[in-house]
Length: 252
Image 1 (spheres, rainbow, N blue to C red):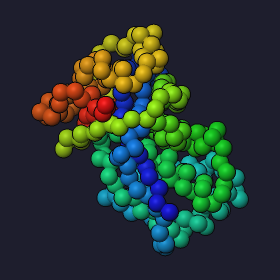
Image 2 (cartoon, rainbow, N blue to C red):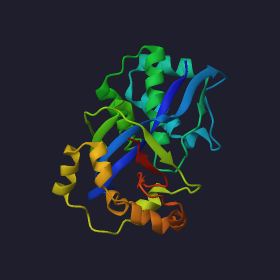
Image 3 (cartoon, helix red, strand yellow):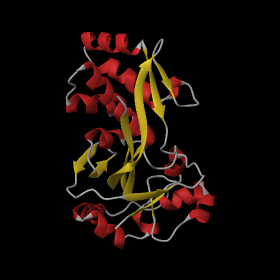
Image 4 (cartoon, rainbow, N blue to C red):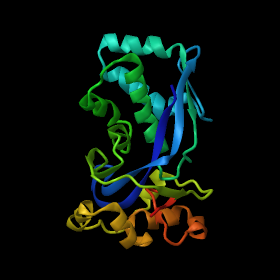
């Protein structure tokens, strides 16, 4: 069976504080159903991950596998190891990496769902969040399977926003933005928490018409510092997603 691992965009992203080494944010995440990676299992020898140019030990999917083993009971762990030791996970990448679209986080959430479904583990949402939370902040949104969600904290608070799904057009320049470097270059004042929370109440299409590129995403300015060539790819009517480099617009 082939699974779809979708991208996301941030309609707005406001940095409202800091907790230890992590920035606290207020953001509206939107799932992009038209842009996705494909993932499936094939027969193999030892658990391998096909589709990446770097070692599997550095892959967020492999980190998800390790977290699965750490957080489940012995019987479930043995079942997972036995199954994956004879499988290769194939990932057909369509979502650009280092582009603010959450491809790696989506792959992590999809992998957990695949293992859970194939092996009938019946992992609870609470247990899934326990497995995924230490790995990455965007993963919980993808696991929740919402089209639209208000996300806060460091990404661990994901609340469904009720609205009819719509089409999103994504444009990704040939530029890779390093998320860690972009956050490190954020030196502005924190956004007002109350004003930012007010954005949670508003319809995404309505917000898209009102938001401006420079103020919708607090990471846009630091991203320009890290990737100055972004200036050459800005497009009228498009907003900036995550830490970049992707731009997007909502289609009417």
